Image (cartoon, rainbow, N blue to C red; front, side, top):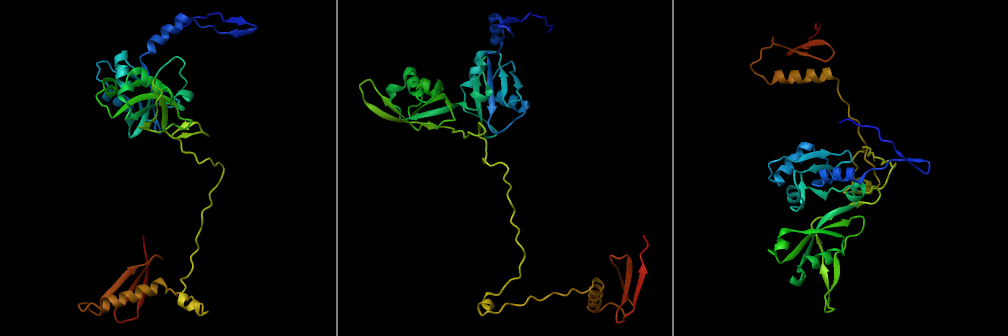
Length: 302
């Protein structure tokens, strides 16, 4: 793709780059069927995201998956139907991690829209059936955030236990658990709000599902427990402190000699002339005879 020089405009003595509307509209048209996907608390590979998308949509043309260094994926579909099939089939999970799905827009800001304003599936249990039209659901959901759409069962009224809608909400604020609703007759009732997933937001780091202890530069000192001899509590009560006896360890050569003599003495089939040899760690070979005290030390040749 070759580029050409276009003279910038000068306004108030400052160089200003002026973009053309037709150029922006043309580029926007190419990306309008794209989705933003952000896996909370994990950074999967492009191949893993491609496999996940392939399981969500049945299409001949393979969607193109892009990865942004900010940590989110941009998935461009061949048409809007494939995009909406993934968009409306939530909530999404990858490796038991929730996926935030948003429609791409030219004004998209990852830090503001993904890390703070998040689409959340909301349930309205025991919502009166008179409130199940799209206009009433939009009014009720607007009390929580910006409503996006209702799921298929709510749209077709295949399930009447609860209504389920997707709403973009600001997770930096406390999520309401109840809404006060007033019908045309003036009757008020409290509508319970349930969330399928409540993200934890770190106000200090401005990130979702970020574990921050809020303490920097504080070093934790390890406690070292020194060994102490066991004290008999019965004797200490009488005012007597038990004495700690020192253990005397015999030299290694004496221990070997005693062990060898005992081992030969337990064997009735051994003759008195049998010699036993053992190599020690000092590079010599020691020879012991049963019933005798003769010891021969031979240098070890390597």
